[in-house]
Image (cartoon, rainbow, N blue to C red):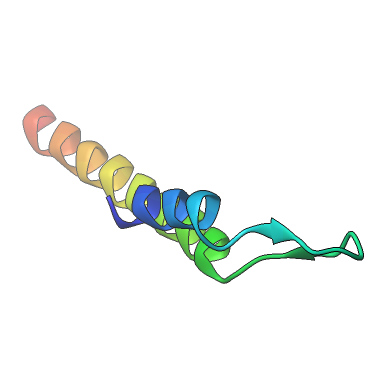
Length: 56
């Protein structure tokens, strides 16, 4: 959930192009991607552990 929030904050508030054509970004995009990746890994391994428990 925090990953989605970080990415939405990046897109709505902190990303803009200045008059020189330079793109300004914050750390919300990398934090969002990292949070989504870690959350997906936690869910994947939790499901994997549950499958292993039911097979025993």
